[in-house]
Image (tube, rainbow, N blue to C red; front, side):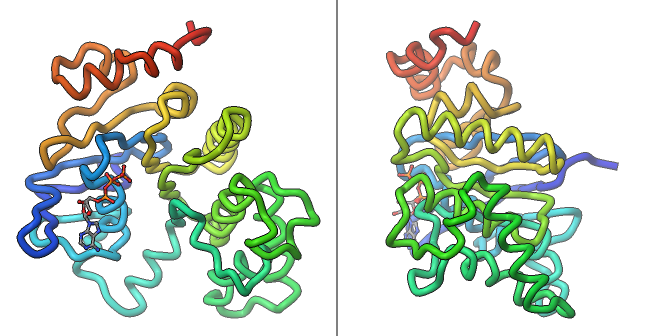
Length: 255
Ligand SMILES: Nc1ncnc2c1ncn2[C@@H]1O[C@H](COP(=O)(O)OP(=O)(O)OP(=O)(O)O)[C@@H](O)[C@H]1O
């Protein structure tokens, strides 16, 4: 039996004649935090959105938790979707709902939950995401960038997912907030046994969180491996990214 919780094979995605991925293969192993990196516009977010079924690929297969996402529809698809949670780049919160109400949205699809149970579960997820209790009643416009991200994470955790997709979770956070978020991701993975697909540009996050890294370039996953493996890759973009001045700054004090 494979321990791959996500398997992408021969993926091709395109918008009109603009090909984003061509022959892309990727695995996410159960329990790992995989960092997905690549230059701007290489298709990291499109890959995430394709895996969760928001974009239909032109070719190839996406298997999540042993099921072919493209072959599922109706209740079978909804059942699979309940086994993952997604935190989009800006949190994608509903502005007219409070934090707690935002987290309750996915819980409304669960049959048999009373209002009190749903509210209690939402409050639990808000607190697991590291927000103070008084954040429950706040609206997204009242939250800082970091709090919005935590609220987006709370919503992603609402249904006790096995996989969490995070799109640039530390973008726009100050270094202390970003560091706290990195620790939160690792802590939640360890406590809940999550598998995490993490799109990031943040070298500190790669160092702090990721078991493996997948580099997107030339329309595919060019290479995968640990941070130590990345340092040996002989490709101009990969070399510049992992050996440039920001990379050196990120490794200070890590050895
Ligand atoms: N809905 C869409 N319609 C047309 N083109 C799109 C659509 N979504 C994304 N693209 C294009 O696909 C390419 C990849 O976009 P994507 O957002 O995945 O890049 P990225 O690697 O996540 O970039 P960044 O690091 O800047 O966030 C870009 O050229 C983008 O313009």
